[in-house]
Image (cartoon, rainbow, N blue to C red):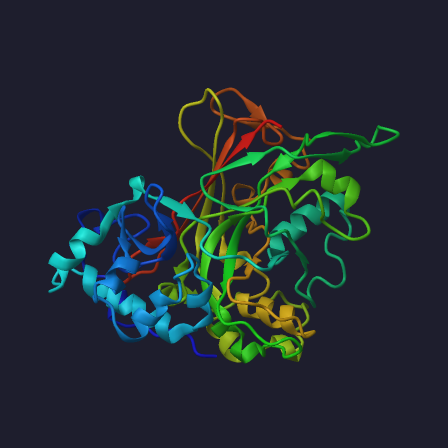
Length: 432
């Protein structure tokens, strides 16, 4: 497995001539995430976030400021999606990062030519970055799985297969939207324990799930699995992901085939793809499995992946309620709550011959921690709705109400490196 190397683009001492990038909480010079944007009624274009602005990479290539593999990477986005760029693999993506960095750093000799290509992010519309052909949501957050399992099976919270096989389900791509999103409260069949029969109506137990989304770069041919030793090379980057969940609909429908209407009504992602190259300083070893847990089966084990295949990403979920001032922190989680590495998810997904395609999206599953403050869903926070959450405004919540906004933020920090972030993943609940 070829982990992205550190180079001058990770140097914390480098600064950009874009004033708002200096010390920016999400998008300093060392990040340079990729996204698709438009201005007014104009066409979709490739851009990179820098501070509170966007550098128009499509125009940069058209004006000869990018060449070689970097220009090839931009050309691959002509249709207004990142799919073609993702399919090229790491080398063109790395070249684009390095040349974008050179354009934007303080001493750039091309500043005068690049400056007119800077757009205020507030004047731009961001789009779903890729045409997502397939979406799979995993259940890799071990602490979430334990917390939820204890609600329904106190004596046996994890089913026997959990520590052997990465559990997941295939979601709906057509309802994936980009932040900021309006999330229509879904309707469906729901049945309370005391009710004799189900009724049809609006979801009563609407929830959020604090997740990451992994973007697939190059895919694989049908019938040719991706080996665990190569699986990490197939991950192009990461976004924040909220897999909204209708818990009452889910409780009634999920047996025997799992999630359906409780999940397919909406998934919200942050619009910027933080690339594998930008995340290189924040790779780390996979947390060791507890004593007594089985070792991964051989097709899921690679020593390099265990040594540096995990990511250290801190995530926060906030709530804004109608009539309340400010943000209320719902939970703080970390990607190290994943029982499986992203590469293991890719290897398992393709192990039966399934073909992943560039631009496919894999969800991590809810990333909770071991403390009450790190529970990544209201289902966990409120003990299945039995213990209402008290808000500073005097309001209470068991599940989300109409008008509530849920906002995710993610940050990577490591001593000696510039901190980088993902931008917001925001959704507002709208009445049906």
